[in-house]
Length: 462
Image (tube, helix red, strand yellow):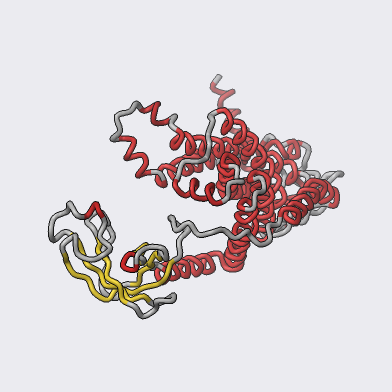
């Protein structure tokens, strides 16, 4: 690369080489820019000694903590714990806010023509075919039109006229179209690698929905579940997307160690900041239904799972960068590879940390607006639990992300430099065509003659 010439010139392997032929320690070497070359037997043994016990522990953990069937619970009729049916809007019209049986007490103080009377035909459930009329009050921002599909919340214990309310719009079709466009774009650009990424994404969702979430609901320690589930996702996703190679194994080890650091830091600072994890209605509802769940542990599990994706991105990029540097110049040693790779990693850190912070800020934008208009100091707001939870999550994840860069780069440089490394630069030159070597030698001779002439003129002037 153009910005690394000094490292190439100071590589120890160059100093003892000859341009005219192989040295006594050289050997023939050919190289292409395809997939990573297979690791030597010794390297494979070292990597296997680290990763096989980890993989065995992940599998054993999944077997021991596999949740099976979740215990049944009585429906509370609150929030997401409420039966739903499908419906279709048949007509809408303006109406006084006291019209319709579904009017709320808060709507009675509204102006006469501020509400909408919506007729909805139920299309699923025991009352399929029935039409209900619902009054939408001014504080309900959703606007519905005839023919639109909706999701109705069903409260069986309420009076007959109040059993059905519009819970949400039915977004099944546009969401499916968007998912299809995403999958098509991934396959068109990524081809087989993109298809493997989609399969890995499906596996990740399967692990989350079939193991992580049910195991936590059944009372298993959320931290252990997150570590085992995250380990399974990491192993399957990385090896499926990037192949079974030393390069991928380095990324896996870097991710594994960084996740362990995130887990330790998360547990320490969640305890030091006295975070309870009970900062939303959804969390409170889950805890009321399954009282055995440890909410601080649930928060820590969220930190680990949330950091996994961006860690995979960083570690794979760093490992690949080092391997590409090695491919571009087979004479680079471990030190030169590390120094070049860490420069790439610094740029990656700067952009990724900012991405993490902006992602959390965007998700919490309404909350930030609420605190902006509150009569509280900035520090008071920042240290309140609902904000401190996101701050701890962001900073702990970012520290693990930062640590993953030098760690993965060091491991990649160490492995890549000993992975079929040529003894001298002359060995790498052996694969260059004779004509190219002759041209290079002629250019070098011309450069030396020019420098000698320049030096002679300087001496003559003196």
